[in-house]
Image 1 (tube, rainbow, N blue to C red):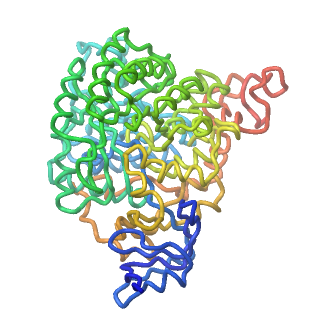
Image 2: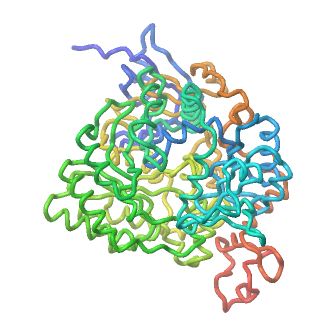
Length: 624
């Protein structure tokens, strides 16, 4: 009788959530050769221990599979991470501005201070953005660029001078350079609704040299490991050319320095030349090319520019150009012929309807079944279009953009429409493949626990309750969307996402028990130990010595050295005034009290009923 192999590593004294329905819970996990050997009772697992087995007692903590983000821009984000001041998780504008002031003092000329997405004004106790006057007072000489979602950017006077915007600079198509009475730019750039002006302006800033970009990417991956992420499907992005802008991640891969598994999609960069891009790529690379650490996934999220709608809920929904179907069909037909999976950015149901017309037409000639193609976002999708996607064997990747933009959506379309933005529970009930992600780094934060909190509680980061119970997920279902469900979107089913024999040993030991903490505390969870293929890539507290050291962030003035990345809940967040503001959830000034309580939409008070006593007040104020 064969003796069981000796394990390389054992996690002991654990509450293991395997997400393997045949074996849902375990007390210990054994890892051999970078894969799961056994998850089960402690005695059975310890029978695999040998003299060289590393045994780690996790002290009764919850262990889960490594998290996988189905939609993120980690390759582009990694190149710039060390240059960016992150306001992700900051609870007050006063704290954010103090961070800005300190970074301005630390940044040498001609470098910029950049706050590039990952936050919303609604997360601040003050419920507002900084004014241009406040920014200029802090930074009269150092260029400052602040990107808020996909709707606007704030530039101080020094940044305007650096990019050369003047009264003679014309507004680009779909964008606006706000001006004063004399016609001079004020520093406010507005997407109307195209965010190209925001990205093009950001691209004018200094870039890091290649060696620094490698260091920056390693720090970004370590930040993701700190939050329990071991896998990402990269959705490409604007100003991310292939293959040039992939050279850094390729070099890190060759050197064995990737600590996040990446499957990447190719995103066309040239309007009117999209078909040529994909014809070239489909003839030179193939989906699945690479290995378990870095591999090609397919096409998108941009397939053709005329099919890309915009997710700025502060402006009306854009109609796609009449040329959309004619532009999209040859690209989809090529991808189907070459058996290339694709993903398509689509915020609105109207865009999805027109894209599905094209997909169904191609499907009549070239069956799409088995391609694992999917839509991204789909905030306003209808049941009819969910049915159409299911019939074609497609999927939907949802992101927590509404956690950052829910207040704007509800203000424009009303709280009733916001209740299914997107209708995730309905998608699951109708049998569509659904996965979760963040769309980080520019619109929403990369923190997966913010997404999990949003899926479970239905609340925005500003405290507004968006969804009824019928559109909320239980914690097990939400976690599945962040693990093995996402493997469908990278054609890696059965390879990872569960703690099951033979799967990659990507494991996370949590700081707090995801299944036990209050819903509002889910977003504060981190990892104390993250394993990639059984090897520690992050450790904190009692496990800090297990992970390899990372070289200091480069350059030496990097905001990462001072502040790190996502700002965990700080003492300032426990201050009574911040607690009140968080509970209040103010989002818009009301006519009665000079402040508002849009967060009351999520309370038991019937503020949305105009005929009731509360609704008759003309605001959402329950603090009378």
